[in-house]
Amino acid sequence: MAHESGGNQRSAEHPLSFPRQIFLSPDSNHRRKSSLVSSEDPRIDQRRTDSYDRNTACFVHSLLNGEWVAPAETLEDIDSSVREKGLVSGESRPEDNDSLSVVDHASRLPEQGAPAVVHSRHLTKRQLSDMAWNVRRLSKRLGSIKLRLTVKTVFLVTKVHDVSLIKLTREVTQWLLSKDRYTKYTVYVEDRLKDHPDFNAAGLIEEEPSAAGRLKYWDTKLASEHPQMFDFVVTLGGDGTVLYTSWLFQRIVPPVLSFSLGSLGFLTKFDFNNYQEILTNAFRDGVVVSLRLRFECTVMRSNPQRKEGEPGTKRDLVEELIGEEVGDSLTHTPDKVFEILNDVVVDRGPNPTMSSIELFGDDEHFTTVLADGVCISTPTGSTAYNLAAGGSLSHPENPVILVTAICAHTLSFRPIILPDTMVLRMGVPYDARTTSWASFDGRERVELHPGDYVTVSASRYPFAYVLPPGRRSEDWVQSISKTLNWNSRQRQKGFR
Image (tube, rainbow, N blue to C red):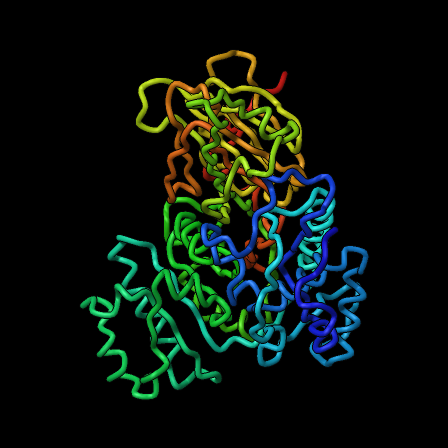
Protein backbone atom coordinates (compact mmCIF):
# COMPACT_ATOMS: atom_id res chain seq x y z
CA MET A 1 0.00 0.00 0.00
CA ALA A 2 1.39 3.40 -0.96
CA HIS A 3 1.92 5.91 1.80
CA GLU A 4 3.29 9.44 1.97
CA SER A 5 6.69 10.35 3.30
CA GLY A 6 6.78 13.02 5.97
CA GLY A 7 3.27 12.39 7.32
CA ASN A 8 0.49 14.94 7.78
CA GLN A 9 2.58 17.31 9.84
CA ARG A 10 4.25 18.81 6.79
CA SER A 11 0.95 19.35 5.02
CA ALA A 12 -0.37 21.24 8.01
CA GLU A 13 2.60 23.60 8.02
CA HIS A 14 1.92 24.94 4.55
CA PRO A 15 -0.82 24.33 1.98
CA LEU A 16 1.82 23.58 -0.67
CA SER A 17 4.09 21.45 1.52
CA PHE A 18 3.29 18.20 -0.19
CA PRO A 19 5.91 15.43 -0.25
CA ARG A 20 7.11 14.53 -3.72
CA GLN A 21 8.56 11.05 -3.11
CA ILE A 22 6.40 7.90 -3.23
CA PHE A 23 7.26 4.92 -1.06
CA LEU A 24 5.85 1.40 -1.09
CA SER A 25 5.62 -1.04 1.78
CA PRO A 26 7.28 -4.47 1.37
CA ASP A 27 3.96 -6.33 1.51
CA SER A 28 2.56 -4.40 -1.45
CA ASN A 29 0.50 -6.61 -3.74
CA HIS A 30 0.84 -6.56 -7.51
CA ARG A 31 4.51 -5.65 -7.28
CA ARG A 32 7.35 -7.92 -8.25
CA LYS A 33 10.17 -8.29 -5.80
CA SER A 34 12.67 -7.22 -8.46
CA SER A 35 10.90 -3.85 -8.47
CA LEU A 36 11.42 -3.24 -4.77
CA VAL A 37 14.78 -2.15 -3.43
CA SER A 38 15.73 -0.98 0.03
CA SER A 39 16.29 2.77 0.19
CA GLU A 40 19.38 2.10 2.31
CA ASP A 41 21.02 0.21 -0.54
CA PRO A 42 24.15 2.29 -1.38
CA ARG A 43 23.93 1.21 -5.02
CA ILE A 44 20.79 3.27 -5.53
CA ASP A 45 21.31 6.76 -6.87
CA GLN A 46 21.12 8.86 -3.71
CA ARG A 47 19.77 11.82 -5.66
CA ARG A 48 16.34 10.33 -5.13
CA THR A 49 16.41 11.10 -1.40
CA ASP A 50 18.54 14.22 -1.14
CA SER A 51 17.52 17.79 -0.46
CA TYR A 52 16.29 18.78 -3.89
CA ASP A 53 13.70 16.03 -3.83
CA ARG A 54 12.24 17.79 -0.81
CA ASN A 55 12.62 21.36 -2.03
CA THR A 56 10.79 23.01 -4.85
CA ALA A 57 12.03 26.02 -6.72
CA CYS A 58 8.87 27.46 -8.19
CA PHE A 59 5.12 27.65 -7.89
CA VAL A 60 4.64 25.25 -10.79
CA HIS A 61 6.23 22.34 -8.97
CA SER A 62 4.42 23.14 -5.76
CA LEU A 63 1.13 22.67 -7.60
CA LEU A 64 2.42 19.46 -9.10
CA ASN A 65 3.36 18.16 -5.67
CA GLY A 66 -0.16 18.73 -4.48
CA GLU A 67 -1.63 17.02 -7.53
CA TRP A 68 0.50 13.90 -7.15
CA VAL A 69 -0.27 13.34 -3.50
CA ALA A 70 -3.96 14.12 -3.74
CA PRO A 71 -5.12 13.16 -7.26
CA ALA A 72 -8.75 13.70 -6.32
CA GLU A 73 -8.10 17.29 -5.31
CA THR A 74 -8.89 19.68 -8.13
CA LEU A 75 -6.63 22.48 -9.23
CA GLU A 76 -9.33 24.95 -8.24
CA ASP A 77 -9.16 23.63 -4.68
CA ILE A 78 -5.42 24.17 -4.64
CA ASP A 79 -5.85 27.64 -6.09
CA SER A 80 -8.36 28.54 -3.38
CA SER A 81 -6.09 27.31 -0.59
CA VAL A 82 -3.23 29.35 -2.02
CA ARG A 83 -5.42 32.44 -2.32
CA GLU A 84 -6.40 32.14 1.34
CA LYS A 85 -2.72 32.38 2.22
CA GLY A 86 -2.30 35.50 0.12
CA LEU A 87 0.06 33.90 -2.38
CA VAL A 88 -2.03 34.86 -5.39
CA SER A 89 -2.54 38.36 -6.63
CA GLY A 90 -5.30 39.49 -8.94
CA GLU A 91 -8.80 38.25 -9.55
CA SER A 92 -9.52 35.44 -11.99
CA ARG A 93 -11.64 36.46 -14.93
CA PRO A 94 -12.56 34.16 -17.80
CA GLU A 95 -11.56 36.70 -20.41
CA ASP A 96 -8.19 37.52 -18.87
CA ASN A 97 -5.14 35.54 -17.79
CA ASP A 98 -4.94 34.84 -14.08
CA SER A 99 -1.88 36.42 -12.49
CA LEU A 100 -0.10 34.29 -9.89
CA SER A 101 2.57 35.75 -7.66
CA VAL A 102 5.05 33.77 -5.59
CA VAL A 103 6.42 35.87 -2.77
CA ASP A 104 9.85 35.20 -1.25
CA HIS A 105 9.96 31.61 -2.48
CA ALA A 106 7.06 30.61 -0.26
CA SER A 107 6.80 27.21 -1.89
CA ARG A 108 10.18 25.94 -0.77
CA LEU A 109 10.17 23.27 1.87
CA PRO A 110 12.52 22.82 4.85
CA GLU A 111 15.13 20.09 4.93
CA GLN A 112 13.76 16.82 6.29
CA GLY A 113 15.11 13.30 6.37
CA ALA A 114 13.65 10.55 4.22
CA PRO A 115 12.23 7.49 6.02
CA ALA A 116 14.16 4.22 5.69
CA VAL A 117 11.53 2.13 3.94
CA VAL A 118 11.37 0.08 0.80
CA HIS A 119 11.70 2.40 -2.17
CA SER A 120 10.07 1.89 -5.56
CA ARG A 121 12.07 2.59 -8.70
CA HIS A 122 8.88 3.91 -10.30
CA LEU A 123 5.29 4.62 -9.37
CA THR A 124 2.60 1.99 -9.27
CA LYS A 125 0.32 1.80 -12.31
CA ARG A 126 -2.48 3.75 -10.63
CA GLN A 127 -0.12 6.36 -9.21
CA LEU A 128 1.49 6.78 -12.61
CA SER A 129 -1.91 7.23 -14.28
CA ASP A 130 -3.00 9.79 -11.67
CA MET A 131 0.28 11.66 -11.94
CA ALA A 132 0.23 11.78 -15.75
CA TRP A 133 -3.40 12.93 -15.78
CA ASN A 134 -2.77 15.69 -13.25
CA VAL A 135 0.35 16.92 -15.04
CA ARG A 136 -1.68 17.22 -18.25
CA ARG A 137 -4.51 19.01 -16.47
CA LEU A 138 -2.15 21.40 -14.73
CA SER A 139 -0.28 22.07 -17.98
CA LYS A 140 -3.56 22.93 -19.69
CA ARG A 141 -4.46 25.23 -16.82
CA LEU A 142 -1.05 26.92 -16.91
CA GLY A 143 -1.56 27.65 -20.60
CA SER A 144 -4.29 30.16 -19.70
CA ILE A 145 -2.66 31.82 -16.71
CA LYS A 146 0.42 33.93 -16.22
CA LEU A 147 2.90 33.12 -13.46
CA ARG A 148 4.42 36.21 -11.89
CA LEU A 149 7.43 34.94 -10.00
CA THR A 150 9.70 36.66 -7.54
CA VAL A 151 12.93 36.45 -9.52
CA LYS A 152 16.12 37.24 -7.63
CA THR A 153 18.58 34.69 -9.00
CA VAL A 154 19.05 34.15 -12.76
CA PHE A 155 20.84 31.14 -14.22
CA LEU A 156 22.44 31.75 -17.65
CA VAL A 157 23.25 28.86 -20.01
CA THR A 158 25.32 29.59 -23.12
CA LYS A 159 25.79 27.31 -26.11
CA VAL A 160 28.93 25.28 -25.53
CA HIS A 161 31.89 25.81 -27.92
CA ASP A 162 30.27 28.82 -29.59
CA VAL A 163 32.72 31.64 -28.89
CA SER A 164 30.54 34.19 -30.69
CA LEU A 165 27.89 33.89 -27.96
CA ILE A 166 30.25 34.71 -25.08
CA LYS A 167 30.10 38.42 -25.82
CA LEU A 168 26.30 38.23 -25.95
CA THR A 169 26.34 36.43 -22.61
CA ARG A 170 28.43 39.25 -21.20
CA GLU A 171 25.94 41.77 -22.58
CA VAL A 172 22.98 40.07 -20.89
CA THR A 173 24.92 39.66 -17.65
CA GLN A 174 25.92 43.32 -17.65
CA TRP A 175 22.32 44.36 -18.23
CA LEU A 176 21.02 42.17 -15.41
CA LEU A 177 23.67 43.39 -12.96
CA SER A 178 23.19 47.06 -13.84
CA LYS A 179 22.26 49.43 -11.05
CA ASP A 180 19.40 50.58 -13.28
CA ARG A 181 17.51 47.36 -12.59
CA TYR A 182 14.82 47.69 -9.93
CA THR A 183 15.80 44.30 -8.46
CA LYS A 184 19.40 43.55 -7.57
CA TYR A 185 19.68 40.26 -9.43
CA THR A 186 22.24 37.59 -8.67
CA VAL A 187 23.48 36.15 -11.95
CA TYR A 188 25.11 32.73 -12.37
CA VAL A 189 27.17 32.05 -15.50
CA GLU A 190 29.14 28.94 -16.38
CA ASP A 191 32.49 28.68 -14.60
CA ARG A 192 34.35 28.30 -17.92
CA LEU A 193 33.62 31.99 -18.58
CA LYS A 194 35.31 33.17 -15.40
CA ASP A 195 38.72 33.63 -17.01
CA HIS A 196 37.62 33.94 -20.62
CA PRO A 197 38.97 37.16 -22.19
CA ASP A 198 35.78 37.79 -24.19
CA PHE A 199 33.66 37.65 -21.04
CA ASN A 200 36.08 39.80 -19.01
CA ALA A 201 34.54 39.24 -15.59
CA ALA A 202 36.94 41.66 -13.91
CA GLY A 203 35.91 44.36 -16.36
CA LEU A 204 32.24 43.78 -15.52
CA ILE A 205 32.88 44.38 -11.82
CA GLU A 206 35.01 47.44 -12.62
CA GLU A 207 32.28 48.92 -14.80
CA GLU A 208 29.57 48.12 -12.24
CA PRO A 209 31.03 48.00 -8.68
CA SER A 210 27.58 47.19 -7.25
CA ALA A 211 27.74 43.85 -9.08
CA ALA A 212 30.50 42.60 -6.77
CA GLY A 213 29.16 39.56 -4.96
CA ARG A 214 26.20 39.22 -7.35
CA LEU A 215 28.14 37.73 -10.27
CA LYS A 216 28.63 34.06 -9.53
CA TYR A 217 29.53 30.89 -11.38
CA TRP A 218 27.90 27.52 -11.74
CA ASP A 219 29.11 24.06 -12.63
CA THR A 220 27.20 20.84 -13.28
CA LYS A 221 27.49 19.79 -9.64
CA LEU A 222 25.94 23.01 -8.32
CA ALA A 223 23.07 22.83 -10.82
CA SER A 224 22.29 19.19 -10.04
CA GLU A 225 22.64 19.37 -6.26
CA HIS A 226 21.12 22.80 -5.55
CA PRO A 227 18.52 23.62 -8.22
CA GLN A 228 16.35 25.34 -5.62
CA MET A 229 18.88 28.21 -5.58
CA PHE A 230 17.76 29.47 -8.98
CA ASP A 231 14.50 31.27 -9.76
CA PHE A 232 14.75 31.59 -13.52
CA VAL A 233 16.83 30.12 -16.35
CA VAL A 234 17.79 31.94 -19.55
CA THR A 235 19.44 30.04 -22.41
CA LEU A 236 21.42 31.50 -25.31
CA GLY A 237 21.75 29.01 -28.15
CA GLY A 238 19.67 26.47 -30.00
CA ASP A 239 17.59 23.42 -29.12
CA GLY A 240 20.74 21.59 -28.00
CA THR A 241 21.29 24.24 -25.32
CA VAL A 242 17.75 23.69 -24.04
CA LEU A 243 18.39 19.93 -23.90
CA TYR A 244 21.60 20.59 -22.00
CA THR A 245 19.63 22.69 -19.53
CA SER A 246 17.19 19.81 -19.03
CA TRP A 247 20.17 17.55 -18.42
CA LEU A 248 21.60 19.92 -15.81
CA PHE A 249 18.33 20.01 -13.85
CA GLN A 250 17.62 16.31 -13.42
CA ARG A 251 14.83 16.89 -10.91
CA ILE A 252 13.55 20.39 -10.23
CA VAL A 253 13.46 22.63 -13.32
CA PRO A 254 13.03 26.40 -12.85
CA PRO A 255 11.14 28.16 -15.67
CA VAL A 256 13.34 28.18 -18.79
CA LEU A 257 13.22 31.06 -21.29
CA SER A 258 15.19 30.33 -24.47
CA PHE A 259 16.56 32.85 -26.96
CA SER A 260 16.99 31.66 -30.54
CA LEU A 261 20.72 31.73 -31.31
CA GLY A 262 21.23 28.30 -32.82
CA SER A 263 20.49 26.20 -35.88
CA LEU A 264 17.03 24.83 -35.01
CA GLY A 265 14.03 26.57 -33.55
CA PHE A 266 11.63 24.01 -32.11
CA LEU A 267 12.41 25.03 -28.51
CA THR A 268 13.87 28.52 -28.90
CA LYS A 269 11.07 31.00 -29.53
CA PHE A 270 12.40 34.35 -28.32
CA ASP A 271 14.27 36.89 -30.45
CA PHE A 272 17.52 37.93 -28.80
CA ASN A 273 17.41 41.37 -30.40
CA ASN A 274 14.60 42.23 -27.98
CA TYR A 275 16.06 40.51 -24.91
CA GLN A 276 15.82 43.58 -22.66
CA GLU A 277 12.12 44.07 -23.30
CA ILE A 278 11.42 40.32 -23.13
CA LEU A 279 13.18 39.82 -19.78
CA THR A 280 11.69 42.98 -18.32
CA ASN A 281 8.17 41.87 -19.19
CA ALA A 282 8.82 38.31 -17.99
CA PHE A 283 10.06 39.42 -14.57
CA ARG A 284 7.54 42.23 -14.14
CA ASP A 285 4.35 40.90 -15.75
CA GLY A 286 4.91 37.14 -15.51
CA VAL A 287 5.27 34.27 -17.96
CA VAL A 288 3.12 31.55 -19.51
CA VAL A 289 4.61 28.11 -18.82
CA SER A 290 4.14 24.85 -20.68
CA LEU A 291 5.02 21.62 -18.87
CA ARG A 292 6.89 19.44 -21.35
CA LEU A 293 6.71 15.71 -20.69
CA ARG A 294 10.00 14.13 -19.64
CA PHE A 295 10.85 10.46 -19.16
CA GLU A 296 12.35 8.89 -16.09
CA CYS A 297 14.77 6.17 -17.19
CA THR A 298 16.22 3.61 -14.79
CA VAL A 299 19.08 1.32 -15.76
CA MET A 300 18.49 -2.09 -14.16
CA ARG A 301 21.44 -4.45 -13.78
CA SER A 302 21.05 -8.21 -13.71
CA ASN A 303 22.17 -9.83 -10.47
CA PRO A 304 24.29 -12.98 -10.85
CA GLN A 305 22.37 -16.05 -9.64
CA ARG A 306 23.63 -19.60 -9.22
CA LYS A 307 22.04 -22.75 -7.92
CA GLU A 308 23.98 -24.80 -5.40
CA GLY A 309 26.07 -27.50 -7.01
CA GLU A 310 25.70 -26.11 -10.54
CA PRO A 311 28.19 -23.87 -12.40
CA GLY A 312 25.36 -21.87 -13.94
CA THR A 313 21.71 -21.90 -14.90
CA LYS A 314 19.92 -20.80 -18.03
CA ARG A 315 17.99 -17.61 -17.43
CA ASP A 316 15.17 -16.02 -19.42
CA LEU A 317 14.69 -12.24 -19.30
CA VAL A 318 11.02 -12.45 -20.29
CA GLU A 319 10.30 -14.91 -17.51
CA GLU A 320 12.15 -12.79 -14.97
CA LEU A 321 10.30 -9.60 -15.84
CA ILE A 322 6.73 -10.86 -16.26
CA GLY A 323 6.78 -14.29 -14.60
CA GLU A 324 6.74 -15.29 -10.97
CA GLU A 325 10.03 -15.19 -9.10
CA VAL A 326 11.33 -18.11 -7.07
CA GLY A 327 13.22 -17.53 -3.86
CA ASP A 328 14.05 -14.36 -1.96
CA SER A 329 16.85 -12.99 -4.15
CA LEU A 330 16.22 -10.06 -6.46
CA THR A 331 16.89 -10.58 -10.15
CA HIS A 332 17.82 -6.96 -10.88
CA THR A 333 19.21 -3.91 -9.10
CA PRO A 334 18.83 -0.22 -10.06
CA ASP A 335 22.06 1.36 -11.25
CA LYS A 336 21.43 4.85 -12.65
CA VAL A 337 18.43 7.13 -13.09
CA PHE A 338 18.07 9.84 -15.76
CA GLU A 339 15.41 12.43 -16.55
CA ILE A 340 15.28 13.05 -20.31
CA LEU A 341 13.46 15.56 -22.50
CA ASN A 342 14.10 14.10 -25.97
CA ASP A 343 14.63 10.35 -26.19
CA VAL A 344 16.29 7.22 -24.86
CA VAL A 345 17.95 5.00 -27.47
CA VAL A 346 19.12 1.41 -27.09
CA ASP A 347 21.34 0.44 -30.02
CA ARG A 348 24.17 -1.85 -31.08
CA GLY A 349 26.86 0.73 -30.35
CA PRO A 350 30.29 -0.24 -31.74
CA ASN A 351 29.21 -3.85 -32.32
CA PRO A 352 29.24 -4.85 -36.01
CA THR A 353 26.05 -6.90 -35.77
CA MET A 354 22.49 -5.81 -35.04
CA SER A 355 21.01 -5.80 -31.54
CA SER A 356 18.46 -8.15 -30.05
CA ILE A 357 16.17 -6.20 -27.74
CA GLU A 358 13.20 -7.42 -25.71
CA LEU A 359 10.42 -4.81 -25.54
CA PHE A 360 7.90 -4.81 -22.67
CA GLY A 361 4.87 -2.64 -21.93
CA ASP A 362 3.65 -2.72 -18.32
CA ASP A 363 3.60 -6.44 -17.46
CA GLU A 364 3.33 -7.66 -21.03
CA HIS A 365 6.03 -8.78 -23.43
CA PHE A 366 5.45 -6.87 -26.68
CA THR A 367 8.04 -8.29 -29.04
CA THR A 368 11.69 -9.09 -29.67
CA VAL A 369 13.26 -6.42 -31.85
CA LEU A 370 16.07 -7.33 -34.23
CA ALA A 371 17.42 -4.00 -35.42
CA ASP A 372 20.21 -1.49 -35.07
CA GLY A 373 18.27 -0.17 -32.10
CA VAL A 374 15.05 1.18 -30.64
CA CYS A 375 14.24 4.86 -30.02
CA ILE A 376 11.69 5.76 -27.35
CA SER A 377 10.84 9.43 -27.69
CA THR A 378 8.86 12.09 -25.90
CA PRO A 379 6.54 14.31 -27.99
CA THR A 380 9.19 17.03 -27.71
CA GLY A 381 11.78 14.65 -29.16
CA SER A 382 9.58 13.50 -32.03
CA THR A 383 11.41 15.92 -34.36
CA ALA A 384 14.85 14.57 -33.39
CA TYR A 385 16.22 11.01 -33.73
CA ASN A 386 12.67 9.68 -33.83
CA LEU A 387 12.05 11.63 -37.04
CA ALA A 388 15.31 10.47 -38.63
CA ALA A 389 14.40 6.85 -37.85
CA GLY A 390 11.04 7.22 -39.62
CA GLY A 391 8.86 7.86 -36.58
CA SER A 392 5.76 10.02 -36.37
CA LEU A 393 5.71 13.73 -35.68
CA SER A 394 3.80 14.55 -32.51
CA HIS A 395 2.61 17.82 -31.07
CA PRO A 396 4.50 18.43 -27.79
CA GLU A 397 1.27 18.63 -25.80
CA ASN A 398 0.25 15.08 -26.71
CA PRO A 399 0.45 12.73 -23.69
CA VAL A 400 2.17 9.92 -25.58
CA ILE A 401 5.28 7.76 -25.86
CA LEU A 402 6.67 7.18 -29.35
CA VAL A 403 8.42 3.88 -30.11
CA THR A 404 10.43 3.60 -33.34
CA ALA A 405 12.80 0.88 -34.52
CA ILE A 406 16.14 1.92 -36.02
CA CYS A 407 16.81 -0.03 -39.22
CA ALA A 408 14.65 -2.98 -38.21
CA HIS A 409 15.43 -6.35 -39.80
CA THR A 410 11.78 -6.78 -40.75
CA LEU A 411 9.47 -4.85 -43.03
CA SER A 412 6.51 -5.14 -40.66
CA PHE A 413 7.86 -3.25 -37.63
CA ARG A 414 5.97 0.03 -37.86
CA PRO A 415 6.34 2.95 -35.43
CA ILE A 416 3.82 2.83 -32.59
CA ILE A 417 2.42 5.52 -30.28
CA LEU A 418 1.55 4.54 -26.71
CA PRO A 419 -0.09 6.41 -23.81
CA ASP A 420 2.19 8.08 -21.28
CA THR A 421 0.65 5.99 -18.49
CA MET A 422 2.52 2.89 -19.65
CA VAL A 423 5.82 1.68 -18.24
CA LEU A 424 8.12 0.46 -21.00
CA ARG A 425 11.18 -1.73 -20.61
CA MET A 426 13.91 -2.49 -23.13
CA GLY A 427 16.23 -5.34 -22.24
CA VAL A 428 19.07 -7.39 -23.65
CA PRO A 429 18.17 -11.13 -23.59
CA TYR A 430 20.55 -13.48 -21.84
CA ASP A 431 21.27 -15.33 -25.08
CA ALA A 432 22.09 -12.19 -27.07
CA ARG A 433 25.21 -12.41 -29.21
CA THR A 434 26.45 -8.96 -28.22
CA THR A 435 25.86 -6.25 -25.68
CA SER A 436 23.80 -3.14 -26.43
CA TRP A 437 24.29 0.50 -25.52
CA ALA A 438 21.79 2.96 -24.07
CA SER A 439 22.02 6.71 -24.52
CA PHE A 440 19.90 9.34 -22.78
CA ASP A 441 19.25 12.59 -24.63
CA GLY A 442 22.39 11.78 -26.61
CA ARG A 443 24.65 12.40 -23.61
CA GLU A 444 25.15 9.58 -21.16
CA ARG A 445 26.30 6.35 -22.79
CA VAL A 446 25.77 3.13 -20.82
CA GLU A 447 26.61 -0.42 -21.90
CA LEU A 448 23.87 -2.99 -21.33
CA HIS A 449 25.07 -6.54 -20.81
CA PRO A 450 22.87 -9.61 -21.34
CA GLY A 451 20.13 -9.53 -18.72
CA ASP A 452 20.22 -5.74 -18.21
CA TYR A 453 17.30 -3.53 -19.16
CA VAL A 454 16.09 0.07 -19.09
CA THR A 455 12.76 1.16 -17.59
CA VAL A 456 11.05 4.16 -19.22
CA SER A 457 8.05 5.95 -17.69
CA ALA A 458 6.57 9.45 -17.52
CA SER A 459 8.68 11.58 -15.21
CA ARG A 460 7.38 13.25 -12.08
CA TYR A 461 9.53 16.25 -12.97
CA PRO A 462 8.32 17.90 -16.20
CA PHE A 463 10.27 20.58 -18.01
CA ALA A 464 8.93 24.09 -17.29
CA TYR A 465 9.18 25.77 -20.69
CA VAL A 466 8.33 29.48 -21.05
CA LEU A 467 6.09 30.28 -24.02
CA PRO A 468 6.01 33.54 -26.00
CA PRO A 469 2.84 35.54 -25.36
CA GLY A 470 -0.05 34.76 -27.66
CA ARG A 471 1.61 31.77 -29.34
CA ARG A 472 0.89 28.15 -28.53
CA SER A 473 -0.40 25.33 -30.72
CA GLU A 474 -0.07 27.07 -34.06
CA ASP A 475 3.57 27.90 -33.32
CA TRP A 476 4.65 24.23 -33.48
CA VAL A 477 3.06 23.75 -36.90
CA GLN A 478 4.87 26.85 -38.14
CA SER A 479 8.13 25.46 -36.76
CA ILE A 480 7.96 22.16 -38.63
CA SER A 481 6.86 23.96 -41.79
CA LYS A 482 9.77 26.39 -41.58
CA THR A 483 12.48 24.07 -40.28
CA LEU A 484 11.57 20.79 -41.97
CA ASN A 485 9.73 22.16 -45.03
CA TRP A 486 6.86 19.94 -43.94
CA ASN A 487 4.48 19.19 -46.86
CA SER A 488 6.12 21.86 -48.96
CA ARG A 489 5.43 21.56 -52.69
CA GLN A 490 4.40 23.62 -55.65
CA ARG A 491 0.69 24.34 -55.58
CA GLN A 492 -1.42 22.40 -58.08
CA LYS A 493 -2.77 24.47 -60.93
CA GLY A 494 -6.51 24.87 -61.21
CA PHE A 495 -8.60 24.09 -64.29
CA ARG A 496 -9.38 26.88 -66.69
